[in-house]
Amino acid sequence: MPKVRTIYLCTECGGETHRWEGQCPHCKEWNTLVEERVRPAPPAQRVGAERGAESRAVSLADVEGVERPRWQIGLAELDFILGGGVVPGSLVLLGGEPGIGKSTLLLQVSARMAAAGHRVLYVSGEESAYQVKLRAQRVPEPCDDVLMLAETSAEVVIDRVEALEPNVLVIDSIQTLYTERLDSAPGSVSQVREVAAALQRVAKRRDMVAFLVGHVTKEGGIAGPKTLEHIVDVVLYFESPTGLDHRIVRGTKNRFGAADEIALFRMGAAGLEPVDNPSALFLQGRQERASGSAVVAALEGTRPVLVEVQALVNKSVYGSPQRVSTGFDSRRLALLLAVLERRARLRTSDLDVFLNVVGGLRLSEPAADLAVVAAVASAIRDVVLDAEAVFVGEVGLGGEVRPVRQLDRRLSEAGRLGFRRAYLAATTEISGKSVPVALQKVSDVRRLIDVLFG
Picture 1: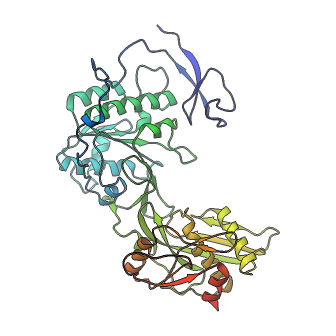
Picture 2: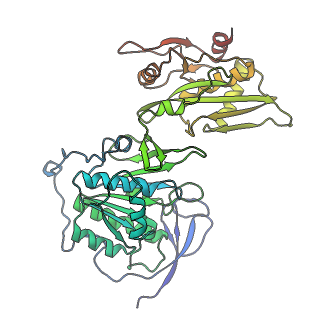
Picture 3: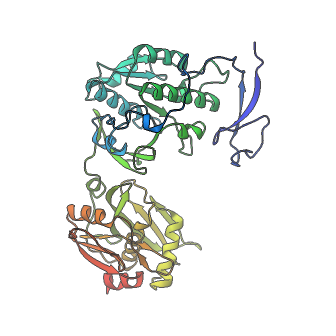
């Protein structure tokens, strides 16, 4: 029997070393090495590889099937975030916190694809067939045609795939599968890496779509080595804003479409329902007669979304004023407050400033700067802003307002929802068809304050 040896694997890059170190010698990350006991596998066929197959180089001109259409799932929001449907032979990784709805969503995906004529195999390593059946009875889609397998051995799963020849494979979850070629425990770095690579080989060879569920760590990243996200073709994160019934699916990687797209679902008694109008959801319950409220026309991937930004200021009772932000970078907020005080003569150094992006969305693009500045200024002056206005623009350290990309999409979304005015940079150039809103151009934050408050 091969001798068991101890190695240390990096959870970020998957690099291997023979002794523990505080810093990974491969990717230079700190405190990422974990101990694992492995037994060298005997020379044998790779897990998931085709028996007796030879690898040979071919000319790209001889490759067929380039015009093969995508497979539609039937959930409009999910098809949108995937770029128009799933590509045959691709791996899709879905990560999220426990109980957020990953298994429910993939069960609905399985039912819809089975109804469309695809053979679907649902593999659960965490629940029995009876437990999956109980969930299937709660979702609106009929799941009778979905094949169910409760198994944790990667070799058994791949044998079933070879025998049943499914078009769609769902693994719930990748951390529960293990291969007998390794002696380490399921969910370890080496097991996750080897099992994911085996499923990739099977999916590419059989033109099969594979959905993988991934657990998340305390920091919010998908558990296992970072190489897991490099192996798959699409990475989706399932997010649930605290206290709200809607879920946000955010794409962070997509080899076949635009990344950074978002899809919204509402959790109901019968499962997850797509939200057709995200902007209306984020603006729901907005108070139009309250100061410190501004609307930004943000862009998530290729989708324009209107979001309310709320600001509240109060006289500081501590030696150091507080800067608290939810859904917006706190360092960016501190920068904008400094610009307001220096360039617009609005005193903020002795005020506690609280900023909130309504709906649980995270605004990371600079186009939200102008809305944040307007909301904070409105809160300081305690004057209500125009309820029919949106703000779009990046603010520089000199106080200047700069134009942003794809403005026509943002303004079209604002006009569709009934907004009449848009505040933007003076250097903005509008091309194409007519603009559905009136444009109020401002050169800097001082000019913005003058226009808003006189």
